[in-house]
Image 1: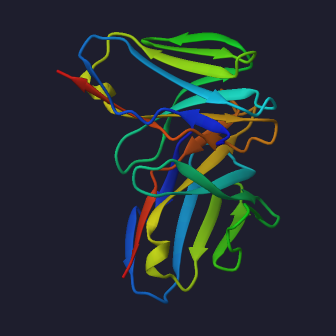
Image 2: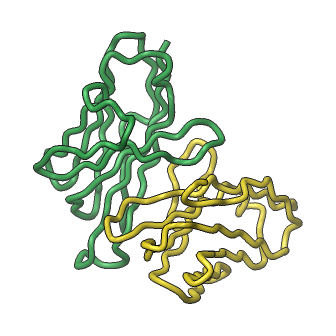
Amino acid sequence: QKEVEQDPGPLSVPEGAIVSLNCTYSNSAFQYFMWYRQYSRKGPELLMYTYSSGNKEDGRFTAQVDKSSKYISLFIRDSQPSDSATYLCAMSANDYKLSFGAGTTVTVRA
Amino acid sequence: GAVVSQHPSWVICKSGTSVKIECRSLDFQATTMFWYRQFPKQSLMLMATSNEGSKATYEQGVEKDKFLINHASLTLSTLTVTSAHPEDSSFYICSARREKGQGGTDTQYFGPGTRLTVL
């Protein structure tokens, strides 16, 4: 069993739809949870960072962490074609070493 | 803020040669940098943790003599792929940890990646 599970998709939605992404994990030591966006042949770009459980909102993006269920989510509202990318969840314990999910490829259709 | 650069962005080399990749944090100091490799349509796999002024820590299965890491300053880490072979062809990505006290979130910021092709 992988330490971090993420559905690789692909996920295709029409413009304006809500994109829902999620990851599950098995390591209860994880405390820091991140979502990165990666365009093809580019490095990952940090979108959201959450410490411990809770919700965080930044513009069209909302991140949720439920440590009791070992489940994290990312929601993208009013999706745009420019949101088409691969979204990676990542998490770490106090050692700051990141464990990544497989990444979900998202396509937003105009 | 939190910009990380990598150089070169792509490199093609002959089998048996060595290739050096640079990772720089441009607007913050990073005592810790990380090196990852990524195969097509796969996620990032951590290769090693680079600590300024000390030896790198390698993940299980990564050959330290093949992937030499030097973290000579608080803004620069280098990865040298020695005696490269076609199976070393991959996308290499570095990240730098921006710690609390330098503004913003204590987390990793990634470089744009280096695509290595070994012929």
